[in-house]
Image 1 (cartoon, rainbow, N blue to C red):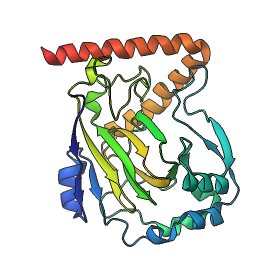
Image 2 (image 1 turned 60 degrees about the horizontal axis):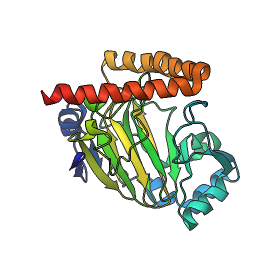
Image 3 (image 1 turned 90 degrees about the horizontal axis):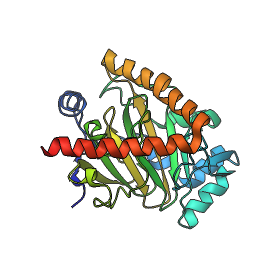
Length: 292
């Protein structure tokens, strides 16, 4: 049976009161199809336009391979001029993707093409909008954002498959100790629950994003994404109103991120093997506990 996946609620628009009560406060994801209808970016951000404004800036590229235990998390697999990369993802399938690219440093005029949804909630990190690009078949591994923001993730130019889980399932998802990502040895879209039994019956949400769609992902939500077409996305991040949540995010950045990087640097493959065994042991223990 595997995961139990439900459709994400989808609306054309939503009032601030409804959004806060039913999605922010209840920590539920939502797709808002009309959020970007007044954004210049919705029509202006074509691949050719982005090539014109970014040009041949060399960008790091990532693939679907399991992380090398001897290297820091998010180590690039390759690099390429941006305009050549855009031509690549438009012409053929590829695993290569651009991760957390601050395109606005290179082209600050692009900020004029988006509108922060301040009417729905406050706390936006205005200095941290980021873009993500991927060829068809490229995958973003299952993780949650280490600083625990709310995320408004808008997709452009194609389709993207997204699977989401509440943070309460993190042990059943085989969360890696001292990290905010899951064991990379199972296929999120088609998990082998014989080999990874803790995944059986885990409940989540699933959606196919299309051009202009905005996905609201509440703080701490796990997300896995696969580009079905060569396309790109913009993430806007906002702090949760809870001081505890902000503190937890800063703790993760300072302790989890720093500790994980240090341990990988010192112990490399031995540390990677150890924490994968711990993740499996914790996941199976959580399954047994919930089955009692």
